[in-house]
Image (cartoon, rainbow, N blue to C red; front, side, top):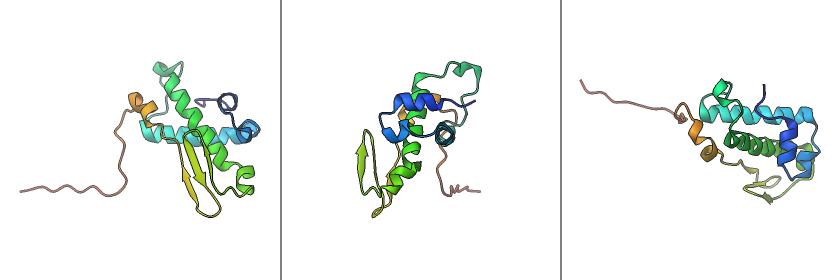
Length: 128
């Protein structure tokens, strides 16, 4: 079961492209947000202790789902946005392919079960 519903995302967002987005597409945006949250925290919030879902987790899911809805919106891409800023987000398309997503780590910090894995190679040296 998803952490939030398309209705939750629409109620949270003030952006027309999110509020007018089809529920089926918002469900895909929510899935992307849940994958991001799982990567950060190391779990899916399916345990009974997370029923009801903590407000901080719900807010993080709403922020990420809104972000993905805007980025995945054909309307936004079709307009050829050069640069747009809203709340904590900013992105540039067309000329400069720059996208930054909201940082929800501080919202999710109390629920992290595994330390964030760094990308790359980790080397250890041992002496004999």
